[in-house]
Figure 1 (cartoon, rainbow, N blue to C red):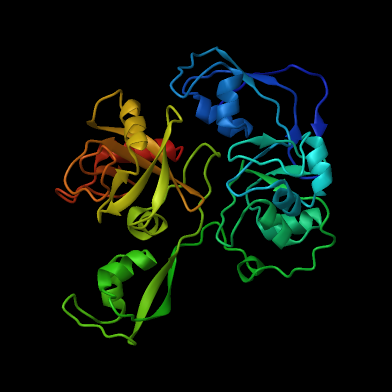
Figure 2: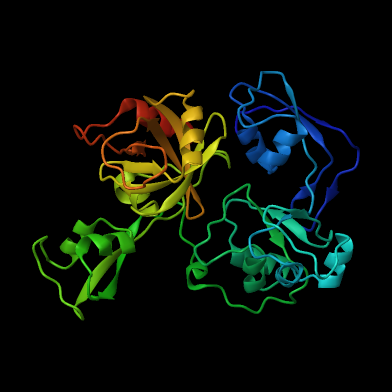
Length: 391
């Protein structure tokens, strides 16, 4: 937790430790609030579900904490939150659990329907692991003696899923000895100081392709495609033509703790992790309140729009019920990565998403990004970015 001091009063005597390297199943404990604490930050520190934490304390997303206040940390369990499309059979397959055992544990029948967001019980043999710096799916699969495929399947993970310190993942039952060789990028893990780099892939031009749409498709500014192929904006491309497409590789940067975001340079890193057209979850750093948004345009920084009216109203409440150019530190969560950022909340200029109750777009800045109006750095935005990065 760095310099953050906490007083934890354990409400039960016995602590049960899970498998080697795994998390701790603790009884309810109490956190004494320090300056700057929010429910969201506390949920990140303890690996607790934010809604469960709020419920345990009779609070909501707008509740204010006071220094010295005691916050109950709900007991960690092996519960599972149902996702769209889940059934008892599918969950059992992912976790390596016999479906009949799962049904019996939850007092359910084979015909019972599960609903997204519902919480169900998992056997104690399904362990949880709290991710540490340097952990990867391949390293953990070997540590627990299971296949990397079963581990990723249990956590709905993909090849590009990023693990962050403090994250909790499921360790499925069984699996036998792991005979799967490490993925190519695990054989020589990148050093902590590795810098971003660029490789290239080929694209075969299809009818209707243009440079702008290709930039959106591959998540790069279209001018980079022009430069990579020695072309100009006026150049004509033909179906069947081969184009080189830059692919930016942005290594994950360490943070002081799970409540902070990566400090990514806008020009060489952040704009590629959050490309135009991609959706993200934005979380206000001080309150922990989140809303969904899409980067629709923006070159010097991200021009962003809320996805729905609900997202717009949530965002407006964060700024005290009024639109404002005032900046707030935020975390942008996209593609499994949390990036340190700063946002203002004034609708202006071009609007791409209709019927969202937001007449224009708002600005999101990252490390070293600049204003569009004069190309200069905003001291207020950069201050907020550093707050979220724990600097």
